[in-house]
Image (spheres, helix red, strand yellow):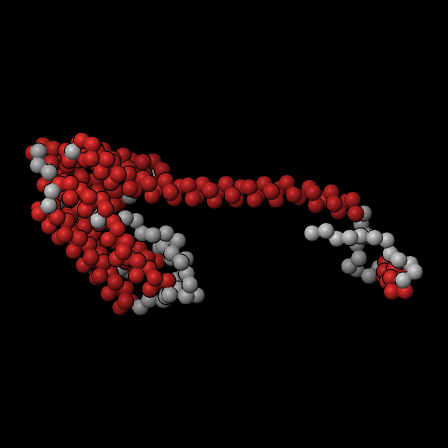
Length: 265
């Protein structure tokens, strides 16, 4: 924006009166009129520009790294699934099983190095994969590794049901309240119903996994495991997120992050 500046027109009655009033106020010492040298104020402002720009750049850098860290965490969570699929397509089910065992163990260690603690779900998943994967490789029977999603999904369903009697809040409430910016105005009865719904959902997936493993080819089961369980759970969760979004204090809160992928994936 540009502002034109000119000298006062002394011949103009209004401008001449204005100059006289300003001079009078300066003599009277009325506050609000700065008589400081213009150059001093200008240089003072310039001195503050560098710190302000530095703070702005630091905020941008911090925001970039937070976003980068979030994307890296999501990629790490999906890495065992990706490794399993690629190894299966290239080398078959047994190499894929070995690769999955290694990937799960590495994910467990990497999370420990990055955060200083083990993630419970990583530990459980790694234990199940190592046990069933070892049986698959030693007995040369792919049925054992095909049980892995069912075991994890069944354990998850049990955890949801167990949270009704162990702990102060149902597991589904802790899961959803952790990803919304504002408190959710949902009754205890509603949380109970949603929690039971999630338990039933994981139990249903556990049964479907066994059905697919027994009645279809290995390739069909692998693609169901990779492309079926997680997307189906996202679709199952989507209407709940929409409903819960209307239950925030302002009625417009948005989740900051989606819950992690289903444990049986």
